[in-house]
Length: 138
Image 1 (cartoon, rainbow, N blue to C red):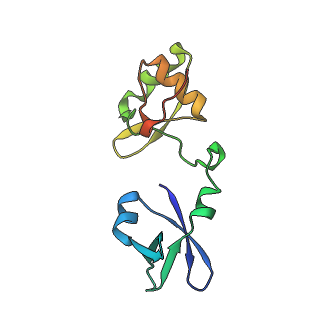
Image 2: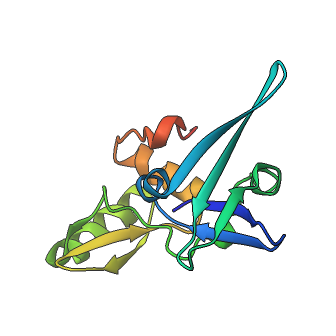
Image 3: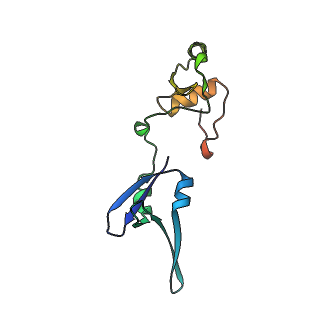
């Protein structure tokens, strides 16, 4: 889930991890007019009742992919039934893309070490990832 950065009115920064749906439900945009200029300011009501303003500068200074921050780089879309894991691991090994599986509720998700392993797995299984507009290169 995305991390959104806000600045409380007392100057204290706060980071909120929430879904886009939750952000849209909680955040309100306010248009402030200065003569001929307009400033759009996004504010959010925090759980304690205070208001915080979106801090785009701090939020966008973090942009970039760092796979070390991923705790669970697995794919629910590629999940299989838990009893299929031994056969899938055999097939993956034969295709040259051995992966471990993360067990969940009645399913097992392939767990990748990085984006390159994921791209190789997708290519070997003839799958295409449209991951929000970012296409894996291989």
